Image: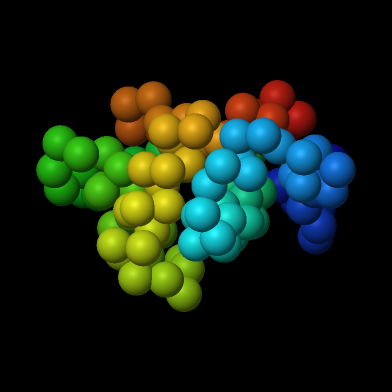
Length: 109
């Protein structure tokens, strides 16, 4: 059975708590990140979110992803955008073109 069909997220607590990259991020980014992991867990392609054509409103894909994620999280769009910038800057998550992904989840999936 695929990981995305499981009712739980395989969160490796020791890895999460000792991640040097994540530890450099703000508390707000931690909150956005944990909810992002939950969203990535349920995506069609495990660990990845793809922007659809109509979601590409401007040339800044971080802003585009924030606009999509604001409908799935209890945070404001600016808070999500700032967290995504920080998470990308510290290489906790990656954005490649129209794809946002978390390397470990993609590998595990």
